[in-house]
Image (cartoon, rainbow, N blue to C red; front, side, top):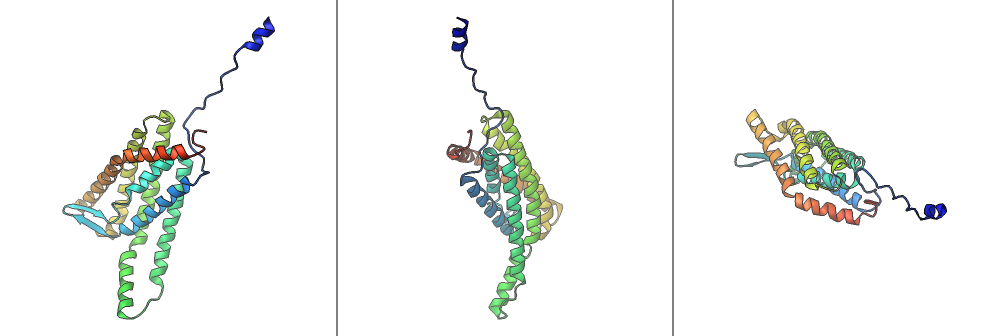
Length: 238
């Protein structure tokens, strides 16, 4: 009888996984997200060399692109975790440095000496000449802002699990964008042609509100993209 009772006792339940769930980097999605982030940051660096003014609003030519780099950073952090987000940040950092060096070589190469060649050389120097300082501003700002953004995303996920994704997206974006905007504007403003405290404050405030506003407005889209990738990542939750 005791043997029967022993054999019929229920098997212990399998241990449940604790902590946040992330995907391993084994499919094509991480590479696509990383490539898109790098291209957006490099194009933003070029655009940022141009000062842009809409009436009293002061910004730069990369204003419409850069928020999407943070959106992609949110997607990577949520799905792949802080380690892979940090790898994406450093890879984008390195590619931006390479692009800046390439601009420097292109400008330094001897060009045609006719009027058209001289005009093109001058245009390149004006358009791409300030980029190294813009890149320095962007890289330092991106490195600090995205790292903070990713850390907040991952730490909130450790508490919330799969719930309240919108809280993670909005909370991390606000802090990350503020740090990014303040660092970038401080370094890049003189190159762009922004002078005086009033113009600088305008540049910082408008940049922060715009970038954060775009990210908040696109939270529903970001949520859909994250859900779509999660469902197609074979190792997510495995």
